[in-house]
Length: 113
Image 1 (cartoon, rainbow, N blue to C red):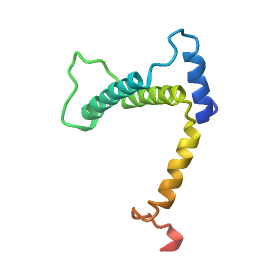
Image 2: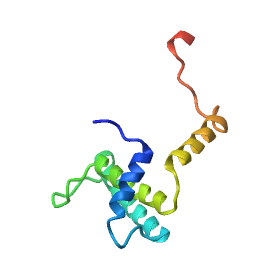
Image 3: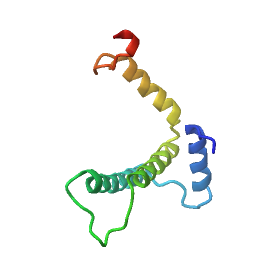
Image 4: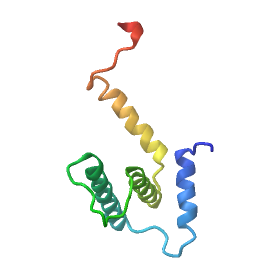
C-alpha cells in the first residue's frame, strides 16, 4: 500500500465529510472534539505507561487508534478553516530548523567522533 501525502489525506477526509448535509462542525465544536479525543488519548497513555490500570469493563483501545482519531479531527479542523497542513508543517519545520536549531543536544554521527 502506497503512503498518502498530507494533501491526499485532507482530500480523503473532505470527500468523506462532503457526503453529509451537516458538513464540518464550527471551529468551537471542532476544538471541543479535539479536546475530547485528546482526553481519550491521555487515558490510553495513562493505562499503558502510567499508574492507572484499565478496568476489566473498559473497552480495549490502543494509542494508535486514539492518535488516528486525533489526526482525523485535526484534518477536519484544518479543512474547515481552509488550512493546508503541508504548508503549516513546512512553516513549523522552518521555525524549528532556524529559531530552535541549537536548542537541543544533537546526536553526533560516527564519522564526526
